[in-house]
Structure formats: structure tokens, C-alpha cells
Image (cartoon, rainbow over all chains, first blue to last red; front, top):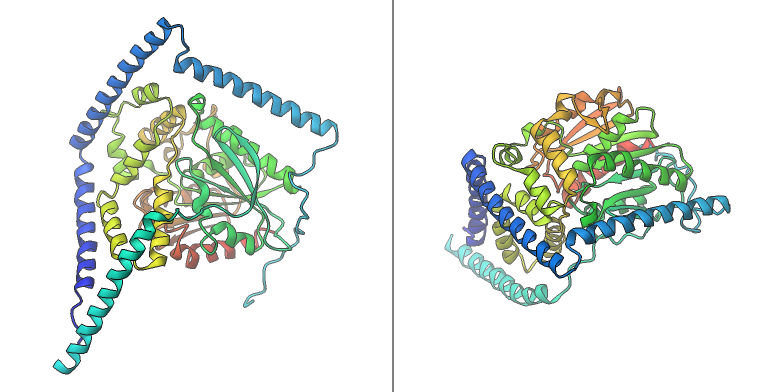
Amino acid sequence: MSKPDPGTFFREMLGQWEGIANQFGAEMMKSGEFARTMHGATTAGLKAKEAAKEAMSRALEAANMPSREDMIDMTARMRGIEARLDRIESLLAKIAGDAQPASDRPRPKRTKKPPKKGE
Amino acid sequence: MTDTAAPDLVEQARVAFDRALKRNIKGLGYFASPAPVLGASPKDVLIQRGTMNLYHYRPMSEEVYRVPLLLVMATTNRGYIFDMVPGQSLVEFLLKRGYDVFMLDWSPPRPDEKDLSLEHYVLDFLPAAIARIAEETGEPDLTLVGYCFGGVLSVLWAALHPDGPMANLVTFTTPIDFKAMEMFQAWADRRFFDVDRLVDTFGCCPADMLYTSFDMLRPAQRLAGQIRLLDNLWNDEFVKSYRMFDRWTTDMLPLAGEYFRQTTRLLMWENRLYEGTMEVGGRQVDLGNITAPFLHVVAEHDHIVPKAASAPLIDMIGSADKEEIVLKGGHVSLVAGGNAVRRLWPKLDDWLQERSL
């Protein structure tokens, strides 16, 4: 008969505790009350963030500085220009007959067959 | 009996002392050493457009199957779950087995990408990746392999392109009946969850909010994991594995706001994909349109996409050649780690071989 190992006992207990805690936590968090409380806290945080955003936006406007929204709009326009340039570049490459694959490394043949059973 | 008891106790004490010593020494090393390098298989970036990245992995065999293979990653996580470290990389496994592997991976959407919608992912990013693969390989078709929500995107694209260039479709832990995702359903309860306010305030749905949601699915897991790490600090393999998976789990991506709003409304609230009322870009999605060979892999102990949420997909797909397999494991251990190496990867290879000619 093997001797009791405190380490093994501890690991088993940890596994059991984890299972029970996960199950209990899941049951609790599935409830409508939990969802209401969680989203109540999230909404309060969002309201605070909205208020801060509004105040910051006004302050930046007063200081004649671009807001975050202005910067996002500007980035979106730059993205549009980048995409257009990409399209022009690839079109030019095609016209120049330069539509080569990305790398010039030797490519393997695409002729592989499945190994025979037992290989 | 007392004769054998004494040596046993001495041996146990010796092992415990040895481990305690190693724990202390290696514990210092843990905090001082860098995290393992993940996702390092050699690759070329074929497309880098905002949140979208298309990689082509460099072949590791002299001859490859004709049909290229595209891995489509979930939009919430990084694609290196498929390419952890040598010996534990699905990408490396597939390359060595003779597949030409591509991956559609995601970067965090930038603030100016907050308006990206499901239509962008299904009708722009996926088709752009597929067209680029055709250009790169010269092959007219490909195998799509979608993981989690990457599977949803793949299924949506495939249903809208029944004559499209798809040779095979494979989905891993892909949710279809969102009502069966009980925890997420409870948290996304439309009586309390104001998705419009969240998206309008943040732009993109923050990654830490998503991480907290996933973490709360198993509230004791993190603490128990840390205790296990402390207990196993003497074990290099355990520590290496812990660090890999911990890094991946915490490395979540924000979601584009409009995309998050749509998935919440159309899938979590209205369960449209399961109900057969899903539309993308004004086009009706009929999963019965998918007729290519189909492999659906479900994880038996998946706490993120429970079996009940994933299993109905097999009956909804129109393919004559279709198979569902339920494997032991969870949402992540299905695709990466020791279990995946033994279970999923060989099965995937077996299924694909004859269908990749």
C-alpha cells in the first residue's frame, strides 16, 4: 500500500476547489441580477468616460487643437489614400508585366500524393 | 511494514526538498528570462492592410499537395496559437506533412477602423486573401480552415460563394447556436447590455473588456493556474507550456465597434445564423449552399463554445461528404499543446490528404 503523499493530496484538493469554485461562480454569474449589476457598473463607467470626452473635446476646440475624432478622421483619409496607392502600384506592376510572386525562392512541386497506408 | 515505510518517507522528503530547491532557483530564472518566442515559423507577409494580415509560410518539404490551405484565425485572438514553438506548431506540422500553408491573421483594429463591419470581413478581407493565394499559387481552389469565430467567417463566406474556389472546409470549435452559449447569453442580456453606448463611447470594443469576459467563464482558473505554476516551477516543460498559453490567452485583440455591435445583435441576440435568417451585405446566408467536403471538429469540454453551440452546424451544411468529430479537450487544447499533437493534428492530416490533390 503506497504512503500518503501530502503533495498529491494538495493537488487533488486544488483541482476539486477549482471545479467547485468555477461551477459556483458560473451559476452566480448566469443570473439576471449579476448581469444587471455588471452592466450597471459598466454603464456608469461609460457615462463618466462620455462626460470626460465631451469636456476634453470642448477644451481642445477652445485651444484650436484637433480632437481625437479629428485625428481618427484624418487617419481614415490617409488609409484611403494608402489603399488607392496600393491599387495603383499593383496595377502598374501588372501593366509592366511584373506580377511575380512575393518571393523568388524555388517553389516546391505541387504534385504530392498521400503516403500509402502503413508508411 | 515499518521496514518499508522509512525509506519511502526519506525518498518523499528528498524529492520534496529537491523540488523546493529547484523551485527557488528556477523561480528567479522565470522572472529574469524573456518569454518564449512564438509564431516564429518562417513566413512572407502577402497582405498587410490595417487589421488584416495574410501570411504565407515557407514550405518545409520538396513536394506539396496541390490544394493550398488557408487558416482563418478568430478575430479576438492572435494567430500564433497555430504556430507556438517548434514541435508544438500546427503550421510546422502541416508544412512538414506537405501542405502549402497560409494564414489570415488579425492585428488590433486601429481607431479609424472602428466602422469595419461583418461585411468587411466576409466580403472584403476573406475574398482578398483568397484571390491573393490564387495569384501566389496559381491554383484555382483552396482548403479553408476556420478556428472559433474564424470558422463563422469562413462558413458565412462559403455559403455566399457556393461556386467559389473552395475545395474543402474545416471548422474547429465554431459556434452556430449562440443561444447555447449560456454565460455569454447571460452577460449580453439585452435588458441590461447597452451595446450601442459601449460602441459609441469606445469606438472599438476594448481587448481588456473581452479578456475579462473570457476570464470570468472560469473564475477560479487563473488563481488555480498560478498555484499550479508555483508547484511546478521545478518542471521546465510545465513552465514553458504555461508561459506560452498564458501569453496567448492574455494577448487578446480589441474588436472593431461596428463588427462587435453586429455580432451582438445578429448572433447573440437574434441567433440568426442558427435560425436561418442571417444576411451579410443584404444577401441571405443559406448554409445548405455549402457542398464542398466538410470536417467539423468539436471539443468535448469546451467552456467558451460549448458542444451544444457548435454541434448543430454539421446538419445545416449541405455537403454530401461531411464528418463531425468530437475530441477530448477544451477550446484551446483542441488546437494546440500535447493533446492536439496526439489527437487533432493527425486526424486533420488524414482527412485532408486525399482531398488536397
